[in-house]
Amino acid sequence: MKFHPLKDALIEELHNRPFPVVDLPAQVSSLVYLNPGDRQAELEHLSLLAQQSGVAPPEKDKNCYYQSFSEFDLRWERHNEFSTYTVIRQRPPESKSCCNLFALLNSEWLNSIAGEVIAANHIDLRPASLTPQELVDYFDGQRLVGGKMYDGLATIWTSVQTHSDGFIRTLIIDEGIDSLQAGRAIRNLLEIAAYRAMTLLALPIARQLIPKVTELEQRLVATNAKLNQLESVEDEQNLMTELVEEAIQLEELVADHNFRFSATQAYFSLTESRLDMLREQKMATFRTLKQFHARRFIPAFNTCMSVVKRKEDLSRRISRTTELLNSRLQLSLELQNQRLLGSMDKRSALQLRLQKTVEGLSVVAMTYYSMNLIKLLIEPLPIETYLSISKITALALITPFVFAGAIMLVKRIHTKLEN
Figure 1 (cartoon, rainbow, N blue to C red):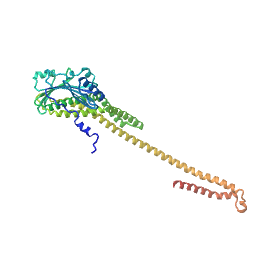
Figure 2: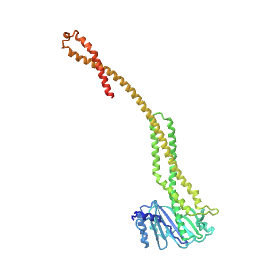
Figure 3: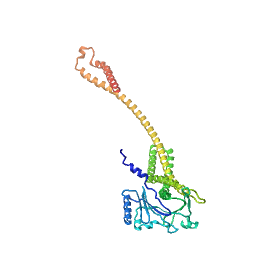
Figure 4: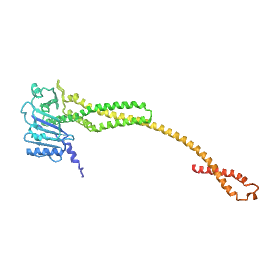
């Protein structure tokens, strides 16, 4: 059997980025770095941390690195546009407040990670519920979003707001969740945070593009109004120039931001799928995380998509206007061609008349010169001796025959040219 060289790589892709197995209680801190730079540079940076801690370094050309350190587990995952660094500690919490596990890492090493932090999250998994006041204090009095998940095996609380340390806090209360489900919950929540941030990256761009798209739409309306005011081919060409300029501006907007909006659609779908995986159940007076996203996140996404749809609609409208103007230009050119052909017909008729006139004159000229030649031939001959007519009379008698011959010669030439 001959195996495809990508067979094992494709199977490995199915098992890429597995969820952790986490025993409760546990704490998780995660950072998402946008534009982290070269992958090999990240691997070398991770190798430096592994060397300092005396653990195994990451393998070459890998997109994931999962390693247990003395006090925590580190998970590094490389994506297309971002990289995630996650620290997990599986032990009872030291206090009732949230802790930042990145404090366990070398601060110099942490500050030298390439890229910019686009998302930062703490997840605290606890076996017992907090009192209402402790819950308020845990989230610094911020308004909460929460609900049951995994069919009631755990309760999730979060404010989806940044706290003083720059992180979003999420609290998971154990009500029968096992280590595998806890690991999947951590993975889903962290992916929701990362994909949500990557989705919303397009929102500032969309807000910047709205005035530009509106301006192009207004210009196109004015351009369409000029279609009924065209009077000459020059006006049509000027209008076509305006349409080309508008199309170029639109294409620049599309080319500059097409990748970002395409990625936004993909990240939005991933966020929605991860929310569905939580299998949330609503609690009285509190919105679930999915309901919060429906209220805040989806409208932001729809704003981005509205700009995309307006750009696509504007492109179609420019294309239709261009087609209409092209049709009008074609009609104008056909009318010009008809006028040109008409003038050419008139010129041809005039040329034909002139040609016939010249042909008539040429017959006379041929007859005249032929008679002169005949005259030169007759003068030395003694015509009066043999014929009872004078030389002038002879020339007069020959002239009609020469004239008729010239006419027949011209007609014969015409017949050959026409055939």
